Length: 255
Ligand SMILES: NC(=O)c1ccc[n+]([C@@H]2O[C@H](COP(=O)([O-])OP(=O)(O)OC[C@H]3O[C@@H](n4cnc5c(N)ncnc54)[C@H](O)[C@@H]3O)[C@@H](O)[C@H]2O)c1
Ligand SMILES: Nc1ncnc2c1ncn2[C@@H]1O[C@H](COP(=O)(O)OP(=O)(O)OP(=O)(O)O)[C@@H](O)[C@H]1O
Image (tube, rainbow, N blue to C red; front, side, top):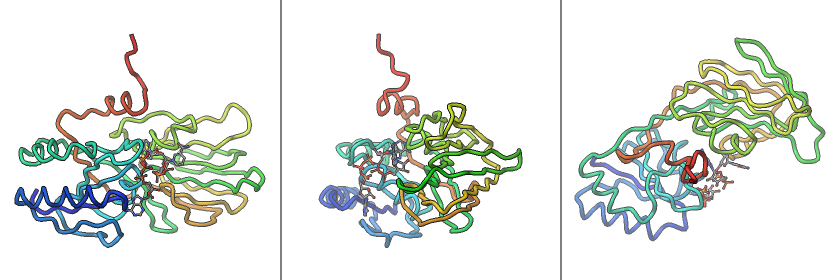
């Protein structure tokens, strides 16, 4: 990998500059070092992301080449290194000491918008509970709730988890549907194959939130697996269970 780009959270400008100089000294070409959306559709071999998960999500929507994240925020669940591990990364880069962690995206057909974590339809706080109908090839489901979420395996450790959803291993070919604050205890998440096309209808217009960004009010959307994929560069010793133990405290050995 010779042609690199750096996308950073604005407050990490100095860190981005020092990484750029390190890479230039090692003989790499740094095509861009940006915090704006100008990086869209660039042709570098690797986009290096300095920031937390929000920065990583932003970058994943803008590029199609491999990404590697450096935790420079609070959680950095999607990151592969910390902001202090530039030297470790440079050694891995020199020795190509990586594994590729491929991730799928959802697409909202009405907007041709992509998401790495989840699509959420949720009412305003002062709106009454809404009636939701979810239909897909294998049938239809109804919920009376505040909203509904359709998440990817990547998003299963984000908002979906906070709503009581399951953790899916990254290469699971499935999506998770989770109602938000549903009436009646029976309504929990349901996991469906990721080749399903999901139609969501709500009896009112509610907020459409895609990876945390609000796209306005909708009462009907169609969501399906997108052709867009990204590969996340992971150090050769990376394993997903390590990150859920370390970053979420799940499955840790306490005694
Ligand atoms: N109550 C919640 O847990 C909650 C609420 C809103 C949004 N979110 C998540 O935040 C994402 C947007 O990220 P942001 O940083 O712009 O918003 P943000 O600043 O509100 O971050 C929300 C938290 O979710 C974490 N997060 C994001 N994606 C994750 C993932 N795939 N696995 C584990 N943790 C993840 C972030 O690190 C952050 O700590 C949304 O896609 C949603 O998944 C979570
Ligand atoms: N390049 C950028 N341009 C504009 N805003 C950005 C950029 N990168 C990050 N942000 C915004 O800054 C906020 C915080 O960024 P980020 O989520 O990466 O850090 P964090 O919340 O501290 O870490 P984490 O999400 O890992 O807990 C996010 O809401 C994100 O939208």
